[in-house]
Amino acid sequence: MLEVKDLYVNYGAVEAIKGISFTVQPGEIVTLIGANGAGKTTLTNLLLRLYDATDGEILIDGENIKDVTVASHRARFAAVFQDFQTFACSVGENVALDEKFDSERVRQALKHSGFTKPLKNGVDTELLREFDDDGAMLSGGEAQKIAIARAFYKECPYVILDEPSANLDPIAEYNLNRAMTEASEHKTVIFISHRLSTTVIADRIYVMENGEIIESGSHEELMSRGGTYAKMFTLQAEKYEA
Ligand code: ATP
Image (tube, helix red, strand yellow):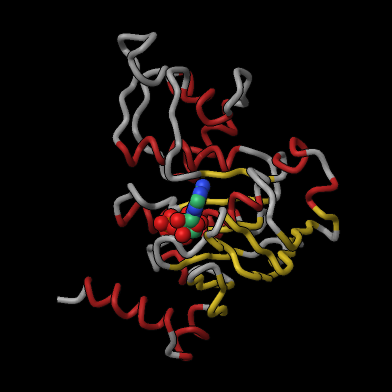
């Protein structure tokens, strides 16, 4: 179980997080949404211990994350950020982030992330053309699926996905959401998303505004409440209506 208790973060005079508390149960899918600058990325950076909070604490299974080494803490998480990188090495190495990889697990991870591009040498195909004139070149969405596959490949209990569907087409986005739901039988998934299709599959949605959680609940609960989430969702849905 992940517990965030009364967390505060100041960047100099800017109060980015102002007293946030929530709990995530094992196997849950949680989505953080909110306008630009609401504090979502700051919160995920704290979860990964990229830096520490000004005040408050984060506990995993009752233990403060500051009481374990940073390396062992991070080993519990797979994280995919918006500014992911792909590297000039094989697809397998790109997914495993290691020279040694299990080819079958790489193939499974790519399948879950929706990567369907045919590869000349399968998972041994080199990416990019820096070292191999015949290296595979990827579109933005294909590269993103490689990054997402890392989260499926890594054997760890927690997955953090920051805007995972930003470059994905609608079918790929639907498939990713479905794969995430399947994966969450074994993993706890924290999504950050502006796309409200992701929130529909979440067990719990946290709506952030100016460093605070202003609403939380399932999609149905928040829609019937008629607050900020319901307004955001209705506004996005209207874009798709003729
Ligand atoms: P977005 O949806 O745009 O990615 P976000 O909800 O992830 O936004 P954060 O990136 O967490 O928001 O930023 C929260 C607040 O903290 C913002 O007001 C931002 O300007 C400020 N902030 C973030 N990083 C820093 C930093 N390194 N130094 C100073 N202020 C920062």
